[in-house]
Image (cartoon, rainbow, N blue to C red):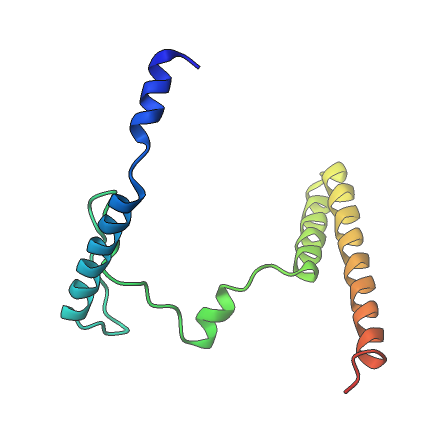
Length: 130
């Protein structure tokens, strides 16, 4: 390590007691600010301009069923369907290499899905019976 780098590294070390007091003071100020501003679920707040500022309130999570379903991750079967559709479109357009590769990927993902489904089905019917 270069001599200048060692001095810079030592300069970044802060006193833990000082840092704890700073975090407590800022947390108390943020709580007071949040209590003074009523939060309404549908209300939109302005985003903070500074890069070091915390947002004034937490973002409201989606509550309707459609918004929750829109956030669901892609499942294994959905990915298999996507690759199958890519394979069909590529085959229609004449891209046989892409079509064969995506069909193989779709087939492998589907087989993995079937194996996991069968294992969980057998476990559900035998071991995890209540």
